[in-house]
Length: 260
Length: 326
Image (cartoon, rainbow over all chains, first blue to last red; front, side, top):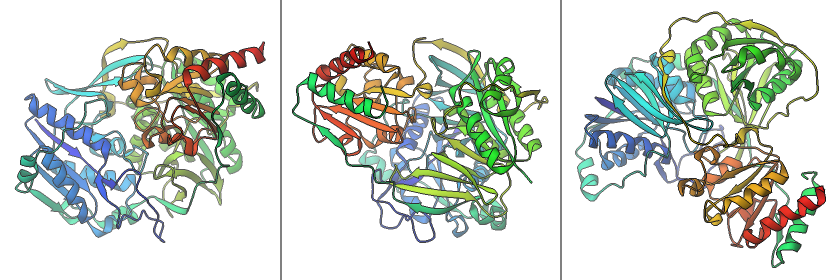
């Protein structure tokens, strides 16, 4: 039973970020981390190995050469080996291009479960997992609060409108998990040292048999403008006021905006 | 030329989700600008019976993909076939887990450009233009399909981006989708279903949300928030801290890993406003915060920030609003 966890390197949460002149995210000079929500996918995969339900964990990332750092950090948490897909033709890749490339790499790795985080910190579409499943012709099990493996199938526990469901699909599958799978483990010193000896391969588009021309500039979308958000009027503050008086002021404020 | 605008119309429990009404209205607006029609793609329990009524929000036609209460992703193949057939300019999908799953399947199956979640969409120069808050809200980007990209553009839309048309009459033509046959997406099935709490509100439907965080302190503490939500005609939500503490159902969690909401009024009590919560509510029209800590981050982006004890102020506010409504 083989799991591949797809991870993305992102700028640290809350970092000062900006777009370059050609309207791409400027990633230079910003501290980079494993997308925090991907750490839950790593944790889920490692728990399945700990319990004996899975045999191996491989990490897969697509990004610039620096993204190897994120893969090393993942390997320090546990797992067996890692693959970085990196190619100059992938700069500025959108979700469609990312899915196409990850799907090709996953075809080569052929895991039983391709596992991903529920969203990335820096782009919030959550479209890559479903598009990867479509490209690979596999079922999608998404937003699992827990992932389990049963005979020939994977199951997720997923929130429903008023409770939760267990949803099952036959292997192989593409799956995503939420932050409810349990807190990600820290890398131990032994893990960090051990990670240096684990195999980290680098694949180009040519290694995947993808003709760069077929990626159509790596994006089907283009950003035409970026600007700071509208300046809101400054926050009105109510301080040092008795509760009844504060309540009257809040009610007046709501009434002035026709909210009550 | 592709002029029609498609929208996903989710049904559950026998009726249309609020997102279906919002997106029908939005599609009708965009389609009017493009010189085409709004066409719904309906699925879920109640879809067949309720499809025609989406005409009231401006849908000219509704294609019913299926009326079963099964995982939404299992409709992906039928959806892709209908979209391929439609020759439309854009497809609006709700920025919910189900909406995202179906949108993602379309991107992968049909190689289509995708946007979102967006806070605005319009027709410009014969194509669609979208507006999105990215990088945790620090940048607003405008985007269009790349030159030569296929249509329709897939657009994830935040709740309350469009206001549903109300009180209008209209009946959409209802078409049963062709059977798409077997597909890998169809292999996911519900094997167990647990009803935890039937009283859990759907935050996607709420135009007023009263949210509580760590400062609410207990499950019982949410009682006063429910009363305030009651007089405001709204729903109760929570931060991850409150959901993790078990004070409230995870269905009511707002934030990066919960719901992304865009109500007319968001009132947060005992919520500090960490970035993970902020990304779930920052597009609310009006933000009011009540917090004991004068330096809480939420005080930096709220429209009205009340420094004080929520256990005194919230009941007093409930009483005041009740008095004014009497």
